Length: 351
Image (cartoon, rainbow, N blue to C red):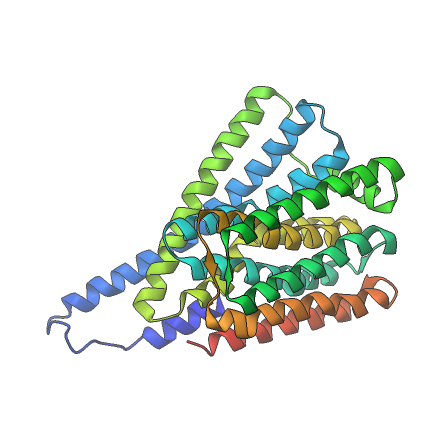
């Protein structure tokens, strides 16, 4: 939002030399810019609602088919909360706006770690079982390192995307087998994660209505969001990567923010942490992996040089915070929020 405000301030008072004396050109351009912001806002709202409907419909369908809560927590919840990122990335790739796709994934992970955990910790200190998060947390850091390596390479090739998806499915399969054999704290966390979601439909017709309307909302919301973001970036001369890292990333992270805030409010703080770890893993391996199948994803210079390293640093920041008693207290949550605000301010300086 800060980036949008800064963009608007920069645009106020501008008047192209080629505009007609009567101001007709300025009026049309101003109207188009306002409509772009309107479409952007509507797209975000529709995207979030579509993601929530899809998530609840998918959980309802999984329960209808007799799928265990453990596998629901591992797969449906992860895919569901990352559905907005996935659909936006596919839309951006298909419309040849790769910088928005990559920026969305990187920016979402930064927002998940700094903004969402910061908000959750302010609501209630986030406490977790060491054994319940060390596996997912270690894997999250590993895939973040992998993405930075691909950033140095400069592109995520199609075969990279396939390998990333195989790695994701392999991790899910191994985690599921490990969970049902040992039923350790990680397994209990995944069960609790799946059972936490409220408003899940039970009747088949309602389930399919949720799924159809949710998927339609995701597709339509993503189209509005991406098209409006591209138009804003083009009119203002703002790099698409900046729009992807900030406005688009924030919007697609709203489901994780809502889920984490509710979990923290209910004092289910281990779910809040697991939600972020799982979403970060899916954003890198799943979202970018699917995007790379459609076409190779090149890294914008600023993302490769700056933002991916901030994403990696944010992931590593969690280690010492969790080591200090395996909790994120309110003071540490405030620090995370301050770091996110500083990051957004630094990105806005690129305008």
